[in-house]
Length: 288
Image (tube, rainbow, N blue to C red; front, side, top):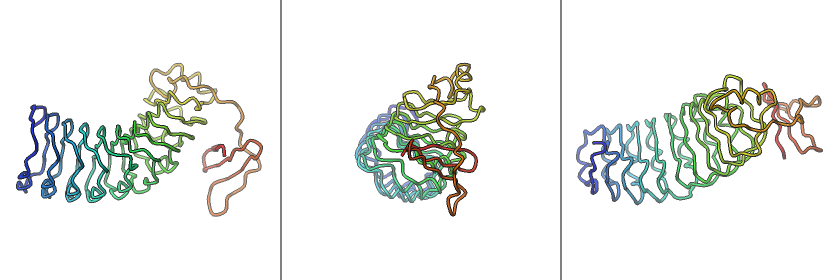
């Protein structure tokens, strides 16, 4: 029942239809609160209430839907905190809570407890805070939308390590700073980091040329000189963003040492205030 201009509220007695496996009421004019009785529908696999006028808090009972595969509540007016009870959605593949009014309680940490997730969209909610270190158990995530969320701090390097199946990443229009983890540009075929405060050298392989990578609005980012020429021949990819060329200041240091207990090489240049880290395949320089 999509786009039928239904109005009013979802009746509480919907919880009596215990054999329901799908409730899709998207793009209507439904309003009010989601009834807590939806949590009784233990066989539900799809709940899509996107594009309505729902408000108030999400009922904690939604966490009882342990067989749910898809939860789409995007483009409504939900507020309060994203309930911790959603950690109970242990079969969930698709989560879209984008463009609501959820409060600034940060990115929910319970996401790391749902390893089945493949797509997560929280864009358009001013959750604020940093991007948490939750990615070790989320290696199956393929699409991630964290745009316009008031996020600050660095993009965790662990995202470039663990999100190897990533095809789409949206982190645009936040206040993120620091370098771009190499793995993100290597794995994701579509990535939007526009309008942040990112800085440093952008690392990517030549296979990324022509793919959809948006980096504009980060005045501190630069690309290697030998890639600048390529970018002017690229239509809509990384290299089409007219990033400035990096200065030739970073070279592989010859006095690096092996850091005990790891495979990384570390060297600190006290004059430049730069920590060089070799990860096993490339050097990175971080201002400290």
